[in-house]
Length: 186
Image (cartoon, rainbow, N blue to C red; front, side, top):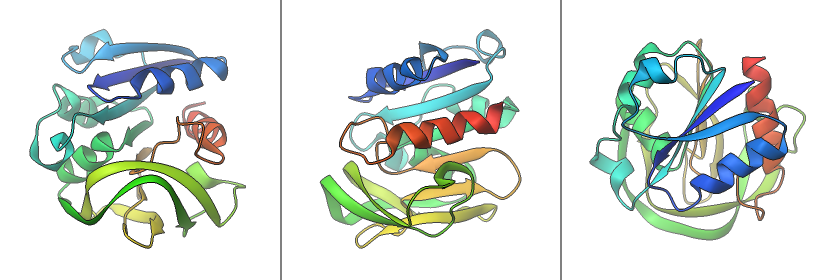
């Protein structure tokens, strides 16, 4: 399975790549300026986190083109999640309570990414901004006390967004979340 990790300038892009490699995936990190035709052989794509505030209103290279043209599973993490929400008509804003460190989330939709995982889990956060309105074609998958849209998925396409960081060792079941994501592309 070929997975491209799109580097949006996030601090943990290499951890995303490493987690995928541990799962025996042919993973490669590519800059977000990579033309779509150069990654069109992907079986899945991960849109990494990004520099502070980029998910709120910034552009993320060619990520819009990937979301438009790719017919494979795509997972946006942190800024990638926020960008995905904005791209499909959702809204983002500064967090009422920015989250850093360990946070407990409640899973509302245990299909797809959270398949066979507990209803509550501890995850690692690092964000000042968040998705404040889900795009119309998306389903809420998980929330925390201070962030309603911790995870989302598209109704029909294999598109997923996570506000938290599954690649960080402090996130419970992070590797299983990646495994469940990869299963969407198998």
